[in-house]
Length: 388
Image (cartoon, rainbow, N blue to C red; front, side, top):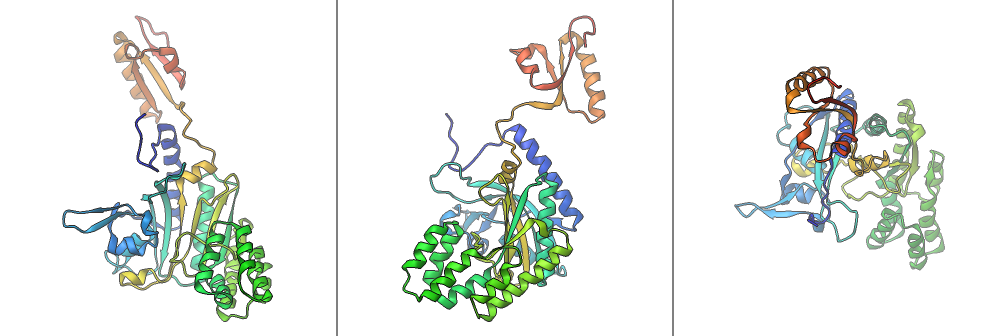
C-alpha cells in the first residue's frame, strides 16, 4: 500500500468526468445570473486571509516562504475574494457578482472519511445590503442544485442575530458558546440536558428549550416573537418575513423551511444564514449567508452574502461513486499493425463528429476481451479484410 496524507483523496477518471460535467452545468447556470468567475492563489498570507477566514487555527495548513513569512493553504474562498475586491477590484463599482470553483484545505483529526482537501463551488454578491441580495443567492442556490441534476433537496434558513439576542437575554457569553456548539452539532438531547443544569429561572429555561421548536414554515415567526422582547431579535424576524416574501416571488419557497436553531461552522456571518441538504445525506452539502463585516478587515467596508457547495458531497447526493470504472461513453477502435492507416482514418472521422474515440493496437493489450468489455462500442481493424 502507498498511503496518502491524512484526508487527501485520489479522483479516478469516471468520477472526474462526472464532476467536470456537474461543474460545467453549475458554471453555466451562475453565468446566466450574471456572476463572473474568479480564481485566487492556493497560498495566502496567514496574517491576512488566514486570520480573516474564521477557520480554526488548528485546521490551517501552514508553511513558511523564503523570507520567513507564514503562509496558509486557503481554507475558504470568502476571505480571499474579500481581499481581491478590496485590492485588485477596488475601483469596480458595487455590487459585484463573483463565482469560483477551487480546492480548499482544512487539516483534520485522525478520523475516517473526512477530507482535508475538497473542491467547492460558490458565489459572492458584494455590496448589496438589501434583503433582495439574500433572496437572490438563495434562489440561485436552488437553481444551481437543479442544474447539477439534484431534484430532491431542501434549504433551511435562520438568522444569526435572533439567536444571539435570545442567548444574550438569558445566559452568559460562555454558556451561549456551549449552546451554539450543541446546536451546530445538532445534538439536541445534550442541548436540553445542558439547559436543565443551568442556574436559571424556569421561564428562562423554557425560552431556551422553545428555541429548538422554532422550525417550519413562516408560521413559526410569530411564535418566535413571543419568547423575546429584544428589539434586535424582532428585527431579525422581520428580515426573515421580508426574505420569505421575496423567495415566494422568486418561486423557490417550496424548498425552504425556517430554522432558528441554525448555526454554521464559520463565525463571520452577521445576518441571514442557510444550509442545503440532499434528501439522501445526513449532513449539509451547501451553506451560506450574510457577512457584512469581513470586507472592512481588508479596507473596503461593504455588505456581502453568498454560498458554497461541496462538490464531493453533491456527487454523493447524486449517487455517483468512485467505484464506477466503465467508460461507456467512449468507442474503442482495435487495430492490427496492417490496418493501422484505416483505423486512424476512422478515428479521425468520428472525432470530427464529436465522438470520444480510443485507439488501441491489439498487440499492446494483454487481455483483449476484458479490455473491450469496458466500452459501449468496439470496432476492429485486424487481418487483411475489413471485419468491422
